[in-house]
Amino acid sequence: MRLAVLICFLAGVALGQSAPKPNPPTDREYFRRLYDRGTFFENRKATTPEGFVTGFTKALNVDYVCFSDNPRSGMFFTFVASAYDPNYGAAEDKLTASSLDLGIHTNRTQKQWDTMQAIQQSAPYVRFLPASLLEVYSRDQQQYFRNGGRILTADVYEKEMKIAELQFRADHNNAWLVSVSAPDSNGRTRTNRVLQLSIDRATMHYAESIAPLPAPKARLVQISLDYHIPQTGACEKIPDPK
Image (cartoon, rainbow, N blue to C red; front, side, top):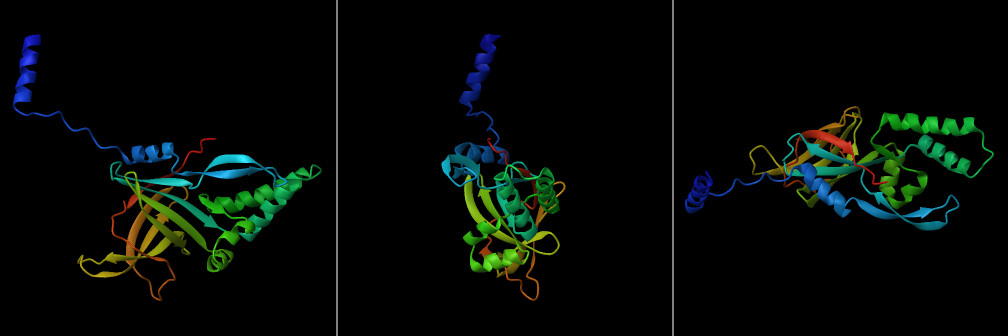
């Protein structure tokens, strides 16, 4: 029996037969490799309530990762969405001040938490910025945020390489838009289009589509789109190592 197996093996080698090729990694495996390397983290200062720096901590610089419905599409993207709400900011400031006042009444503290929670539930995957952080943005972006605007920044990866950064702006229908230059239906002429990203806040399922630029033209950041993005999939919270 062993001799027969050996003969078959040698015959296979002689005929040039090769072992079947392994399947390529899944998109989730590519993401995990980058996660383990620390790609999605940064060092941030750890401070006391009084503002004294006590050291540094490892923190995520993105919030969500989105995978295609095709697990081996070769692409995925991460994102962080930001907004400013004056009521949220005021409640957060009062809550921070309360942490320094040991005599604060519990009901007042709970009221601030309830205010922040209600606003957060309206957009569960969006970061609401404190007023102090608005200063890191340009003057136009600060005004955009103060007028109720929202920005979603997505980093697109092909396997283990970041290939693009897209900055979407929210419309009134809970969709995210960015103006792009993309080939039209004949594949030859480049025309202006809008890349639309919709995320269901209950299921975190996403859908992407390209549509003609609306009239009048929206004031959106324009980018070149020279690659294909998975059109549907699901987003999930990136785990915090803490």
